[in-house]
Structure formats: C-alpha cells, structure tokens
Length: 355
Image 1: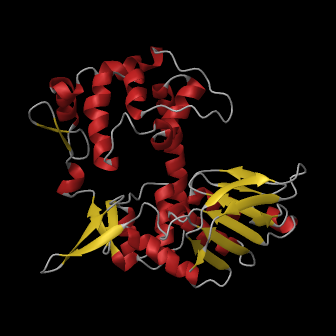
Image 2 (image 1 turned 135 degrees about the vertical axis):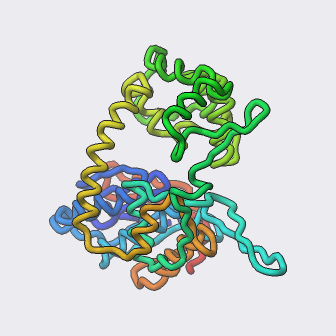
C-alpha cells in the first residue's frame, strides 16, 4: 500500500493519462500532451508546493514516455513506474528469429510509426533524445509500398485511392468498382442520420466499429472497406473492437455535433491552420540532421531491431536516472480517495519487482 499527498505528488495513469494535484487538474491521452502541458505549466509548478512523488501506472510506451518527460521537467521528484506484467513496453513487442543465414524480425504488435504531425513530431523528438536516428528504417512516400494499397473484392484486387493516383483515376475507381458502391451517397447523407443520445458524463457506453460505421454509413462499407483496413492494422474483428477506443474522435464527434462528416469538415479547416503553425514552428527550431529530416518526410518507419527498440531504449534511459524506479510484476488494483478533503490517496497493489 502506498499513499500520495496531492500537494506533494501526482499520479499518472496510462494509457488514458490522468494526473492530478490539489490545484491543477489535466486529463489527456498522449505523452505529447503531457510534455506540452508540463512545459507550459512550469510556472504553476514553481508557484505551488513542489511535487516530490509521482506514480506512473502502466509500463507501456505511454507510461515509459510519460516517465521520461516527467523526469525532464521534475528532476527533483521521485518517479515510480508500476507495471503489472514481467516486461515493459506494452504492445511494442518484437522478436528476432534466426533463420539460418540471418535473422528476421517478427512483430507481435504495431509494425511501423508515422511521422504525421503533431503527435508524430513528438515521437521524432523522443527518437532524437534517445539517439536512435541511426537505427531507423524508413519507407519513403515515393516507394511502391507507400503508393499502393489493395483490397481484394469481390474477385479481384482493387487499388485504393491515394498517393500517385490521378484525380480522374480516383473518380473512375470510386464509381466503377463494386467495393465503393454506396460510399459517396452514404458520406453525403451521413449528416441526415439520427445521432445517438448524448451520454451522461463519465458514462461507460461503447459500440463496436462495425456497428458504428454500419449505422453512420452503411453495413456494406463497414464489412468490405472498414473490416479490411482494421484487419490489416489490428488483426481483429470490427464487431468485437471498440470504436470508442480505436476511433474516439468519431465517437465524440457524433455525440457533440450529431454528424461525423460535419465534424470532419470543421476539423479539416482547423487542421490547415494548425499545420501552418506547426510548419512555422519547425522552421524556427534549431537545425536537425539530414536523417531526422528524412524520417519526418517518410511515409512510415521502424527500427532495425523492430518497433520495441524504442521501448527498450526508453527503459535503458530511465534506468540511468537516479530518481526513477521501475517496478514490474506489480498489479495496482485501484486508487481511491482515503479522506473526503482530498488530502490523501490510498492504493493497493500486489508483490513488486524493482528493476
């Protein structure tokens, strides 16, 4: 059992990050937001009583990155990361297999990363911090792999619209291939379909990806297009995967605006302004290496020893810091307020292994 006093410590819960003090409360889902918020709120930390203890719950990539950024911004705080399993890295798990005349890397989780902004740029910054530039394997945007995506339907390969396809070819494909039958009309009329009722705050309702897109577009699009894409990324059934977890923006867009397409149009306009601001910020940043610039301009990338090399390097970096403890085989059952005045937290966990 351990206790945390809010005015002296914060708790980071991952993957849906929750960090709280008695005077400041933030909630976000990404390590990038964690770093940005810690930086912009440094003055507030100096004004409040100093934070002496931080607990990070979860040793996946979000927990590791959170601990890394917290250690940078709070060098005098004691940071303890708790992981329920025996290994760190979460879904990032790569295995090297000796095939006789060499080794191949098999991924048991995600295979590649995208350098898309803004979150992708934070990952690039992390790669630079960890000095992993020379370990990156890139796929350029001009490569055959990046320009070609296919779905087999109903009896032949259909090239999906994307980079390298002309506007005329895209229009022809959209209206001639059975795969896309009804897609244009479904998108044009999506805003006319009734939205689900707004959920009460903190409500736990959810829906499968298949059900959501069947309802907002039509079942054929869900079964033939969404299913193929999701199988390629998550290797899972769209009728058993949570839309709220995988496509949270779509889920909350329908709840907030009643229409996903209307929200997409508004976000697209906002994205142009955001991209322009980020480009300007990047231009003012200190010069980066040619390797980092190449990674930023790539389609996707991974690492020579697999995607888990990022997590492994993070773990190695964290072990070097005297103010960080990494505890595996430690299952945290829950955190609850011990007193009504919010002055103390009480948490229970199983046996622990410090590494």
